[in-house]
Image (cartoon, rainbow over all chains, first blue to last red; front, top):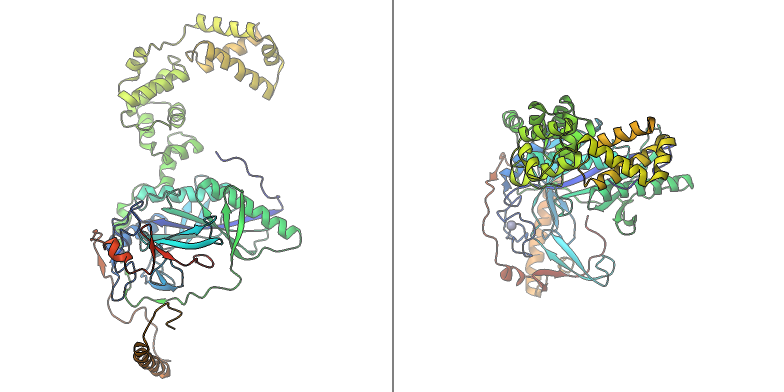
Length: 481
Length: 88
Ligand SMILES: [Zn+2]
């Protein structure tokens, strides 16, 4: 969980749209046969096409188009005949002095994305373009402004990207994070991209503005870049929103500009001004012909789409799993296991608690739905404490096997009621102050003391005690000392 | 223009290129003079569509050969003057 960010005053409303670039999981680049691979030696995956050498001609990668259409359909977009344009600019990250992108004819437009909380963010477009090379600024600070010179690696130049542009429908920091997280989940579910923010295969920019709550107007926005994690996205949006509110309330106004998120400083820093609109002199790339995707091809893509995260969450909810847990289970790809365990008779809540609490387990392949259901059954019947149940599950994941057999091998038996009572009484005797506060306390203090005393019992019994049973005993003792 | 594009030419080459450039500009002027009020805009001059290639890796160039074309290279990368401003 991210730390809580101070929110903006209730009289203001946040307005955010995201621009998300994802690298497509192809074997080769968008317009040439060079390998699309992260982490290779610099400039080893380059050829005349991606270096922009005279006389070379680009040819579109069919797989990239297929993945882009799959992505568009997963976002509910309409797929239209598209064309490639040249975006002209002078910057050494593109050796051609232009980037090939889709301008007025994107492949995908007008879609929607449903977030785990049920809200919907509109998708304006999802167009295909080529990635740029990687420049490293050499100099005192490694930053642009004090660079003495720059080094360029063109391995990434020409890697296929889809840029997803959402509508400015996002109203909270949490929703901004959830939107990027959901896009990542969709990308990986359909195999379009590995969508790793830390490796740059998914890059998120946020357009942030604020307005008086309920006003419906769109005020000056700033584009925040350099967001390398969902956590950074949340922090940057919160910071930028507060900055805007501060400016408006002081009678000033934000400048329309690009800003960079400074992770260590926890702030955004002014970058390029957007007051003059850049003129990229877009025009149709004469070397590339239009892409048509007919209805039959779209139907084929639709038929091959796997069940998407939103539908999978709905499936878990229908099986009785709480919404928040369902989101986590789907994110981790454990929904098939949980559904099968529930079908095998397991209690949904308990099963999900086990699965969600043990997300740290790397390999779940040995855990069968029947085994998981049996484990949940043993825990529910009080034959295993929660702590023991977790250990049994870890062992099941490591070596396979039936939970009853594993529990026996580990020497786990539920504590006899008499032993548990003795342990509870010992703890009560050893901590009279806390016990008195538990008996007299109300609400939070009583809960705090219950946690303390239960913890002591757990420690004394080395986790063999069942937390719920301890709690029940403590309550009984408090009523009838 | 050669200066802007960081290209170096001899005077003879410049004379030849200047002539060629004049022809290109002349052609552009001819096109501009046409009356196109009745023409419908189209995406691409050729009637072609959907030219694609399979997603198969082809050999890339040898890096030494590539970097030999660069004015300066360092650590396997192209070395360029410090860039003013940011990438678009
Ligand atoms: Zn290439």
